[in-house]
Amino acid sequence: MDSSFQYDPYQLHLRKGKYYASVAVPLAIRHLFSDTRVRKSTGLSDRKEASKRAIQVQVPAIHRELNLAFTKLDPFIEGLRPILTREGVDVSTWYTRGTISITVYGDRTQMGKSGIAAFIDGQATTPVEKWSADDYVKVAGIVSGLGYSVPNKLLELLPDEQRVLIHKASEPKTMSPNVVRQLINDYPNQYEGENSLGTKLLDKYSKAYSTVTLETQTVPTPLFSQLVDGYLTQKLKETPDRKTHGKRVLACKRIIEVLGDMPVTKYDKVHAIEVARFMQDSGASNALIKDTISYGRGLFKYAGTIRNELKEVVLPVQPWTDISLKDFGTPTRSYKPLTEEELLQLFAQEMGTDERLILSILVTTGMRLDEVALITWERITTFEDILCFSLISDVEDVKVKNISSKRYIPVPNIIKPLLGNGGQGRLFPYRLDKSGKAENSASKALMPLIRNVTSDDRKVVHSLRGNFKDFVRDIGVSKETNDFLTGHGQGDVAGRRYGQGPSMQVRLNVIDQIKHPWLNQPN
Image 1 (cartoon, one colour):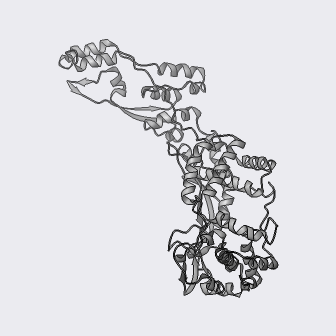
Image 2 (image 1 turned 135 degrees about the vertical axis):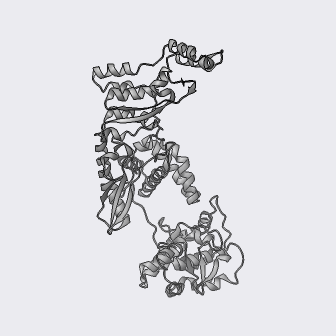
Image 3 (image 1 turned 120 degrees about the vertical axis):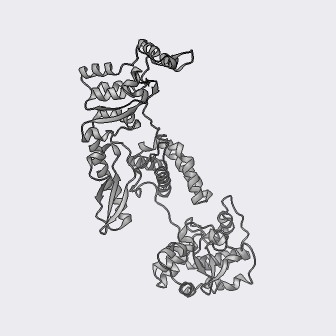
């Protein structure tokens, strides 16, 4: 049996506090097992860790056990299984009882083939016979009797004397026209006339019927490129971000360019390393390499969620799991917070009202630039009796990075005077791009102000988010609250499943503890 046999995806089961990995036993070898699934314990009680270990250890071990079972099957019988199964034969009895059998009706019976039982005393009958076989010659006879031929590649597995017998048993059958003429004489009423039943019977049974070679039904494994459109469409529905979509498109193209366009089952873990090594040699950053492999992994995951025309999972086993890429590519250069002096200089500049307000919100809340640039007056709302910036979609469609970003951020008291009496629609006029984001336009308006106080290319508008996280850490606030405020934790939507996060009052108290001397300077 080919070791690349595609088994059903594995499942995890919790038993007595430990997770077990299990794989369904294919029907062909089920008689060799006491259960319909093979199970092996991961020894772990944490589902995420158990899943990782299952993929690395238990599932490959189960596949090896199943592969070994396939080697115990009879290659001649297995070659004929598609024919026998199609005709309703229970092939497992060959292994459990040493025989197979089938009940046949009508023209397929030996009586039907000779034509003798077409009419009995003037009455039409349906002959019924039970065929059984306990050796290869008889099995071949059943296959031939059902109208199929035994493939030559199977005959080559047998000794010469058995091949001769099978060839003889498989010869196309005919019946003598004399038999039909005798029937016409015996039952003239049924056989008179050019279009009579007897004439048609004579025409049919005077000719040898030919056996048919069965083509085993298979479906080619799709190429990587053939799954790209489906994968991209699905991900675009989940995350309608055109920028991320573009990265996925480029990643898929790059993988095909580096590795070639192969059936998805042919890719392995080493291929991911080869992509990483190629990109590193081309000067790619570690972050870009990780993104590329991540998007490729996403396509393979997608292939594991769809079936082909035969209802088989396209990719039951994921090839790009548990791959370490930390040593590939140029190191990621993280952004640096501004110094206190740079903050003072930044806010001391002359700038427009919109720029002063958006920079003030960024440094006092830690929100992302796009979160602030898209904020509307309708999303400055009261929650738990606290005035908040709402990034929850209860009010309107809100574009955020991920579910952790869906949160409420209390409006700092130092910011409230800058908001004035409120209004309608968006707070800021920055132009939206094709993805409905305003980050690029806002950045173009703000970056000249940053560059006026520092030429360090690692200091950008996003640096103010780093400043905020440092401020929160320095006043002794827990990492959990820090992450909730900046959208790195569970968020107010995800958190509902695992318990509520810090209250709005707690969050406001944290925000208002931070001192911002740069905001008290005159315009």
